[in-house]
Length: 305
Image (cartoon, rainbow, N blue to C red; front, side):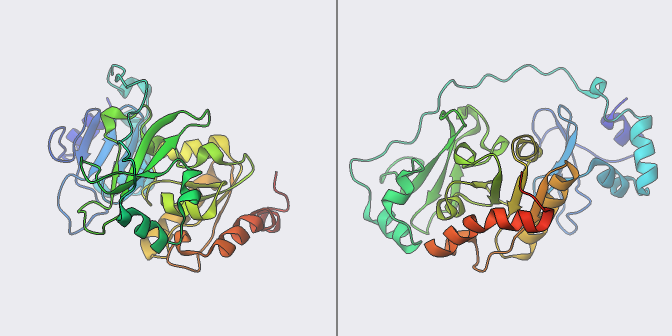
């Protein structure tokens, strides 16, 4: 019994191979991505959750309700009948070997002028970024003409990195460390968590937002946060503010994250940025946001512990 047998019995098409498929997943046509055919939605057979490559995480019961044309109550009954959430549904997996260290892209003796022009256009200085271990690459290689932002664990070990194009011409604005080269997948943790206090923190989308707000800010590497990032937040922090970019989908994701954290017993609030995104704030505005956090939580919850 399990999710595969449930889909088969109900005549729901799925695939295990193809464009969006990966080991340990079965892919279905996401019921939320109307007008975009393809097997974007996936059920993870190891951790037992649903995730769409286009629109992100959704509760299993909600997805099955949509796929099977059932109300939530009947969808949950089907999940119980087919033992969907039971550990016995998990296939045997072998541990995936990972490197013991991360090889960062090489840094040139001097940074290309375009890199300095880029960071200055964003209102940063090199001394600001060096606090986070950020540097620029040179003119050659896969990660040419990019900023490199190492991703650290709390113990100070570098486990991954993310790069940002400085030319405005690259097809991919952000390029992460290849998966096979990561010690810990970057979407399992949050950027900046190594410098975050244990009390009041603020979650943002991107690394530049963290650079602007400073220690206490952490980034999910985009609005599509993962279940592991959700659990990381819930296990390590009590008071969590979310400040995603000022666009409709980002605000919806921020509200969803706040609701999920509240459901896990955390103090979580959604904050709106006056600018397009937190990185666009002035230094003075960013300092004020971080200084105001304790008072905001106290006004919402009566205390900040």
